[in-house]
Length: 377
Image (cartoon, rainbow, N blue to C red):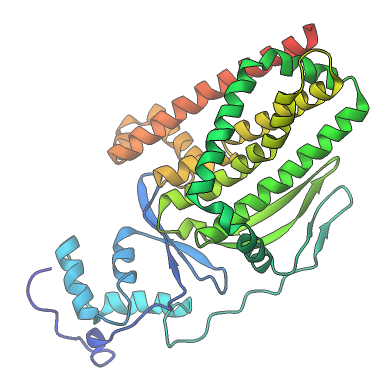
């Protein structure tokens, strides 16, 4: 914007000299690619309401900190985007923020709806909330585990997990044979299934503890079932708004890491036993195979797996799979319209679309081969 700030037009006296501020707890996300557009998420953590804004709106909203006048922000906006802002523009923006109760000194935010009954659904399908305050519960668990979350501890554990997987990969034939044996013996099969369920619960709690460690919050901890399956769940709030993408990736990857950590003691036990037909070693072999598959499959970058979430955070992309699908359909139908996408969006969506299709084919072939091996041996 060139020239002095515009003279206030009829309206609120001295509007451009006001210094409005967002409520300090309002959350703003980093830029996220969404189709051909770049968006920022805005969330009121009190009411839970959220919405998207574009880069220009974010430029303005993020500077509403009470220290700068609207005229000063407007001048910076003009330099960045080459367009002057008048009082009418500010009135629209402030009215929107005021309606959503996001401005400091305005009406208090709408209180969130009280939580519903802990038990929802039917006997065949439903959810059960297990704790009244999931965030406080996770905070206590985080305080207890915090000494273990230092890199000095985590890095050796990660290296130990990688070494374990290398050894297990070299022993895949033995593990696969043991898994086939397990399927024919109900008692050890029930024991392994129970341990796998505990590993799944640990997976969910790990997401919550990791979120608390990097500044996120936990909304709910509970049990979700669709008979005959029943699994724990942990809803993590606000980690889309963490400043560092490595923290977002860490929260998403914590579950798979916890699954591998769960296997380490059993791996040590397995390695200490002699090879051969020992029943205990067979059970441990089957557990290590199933547990490794559980962890590693979760790292595959396909929805709704954790690997897909990690990739989205790492690339700062939202709705990666549907946006890629939409771009590829548009590319086949209207090349000119697809060319209007930003270059980064075209590369990402084309690469993910092709890569995910190849990955699905490889997984299908691998699963078919594993089933054939189990049936014929």
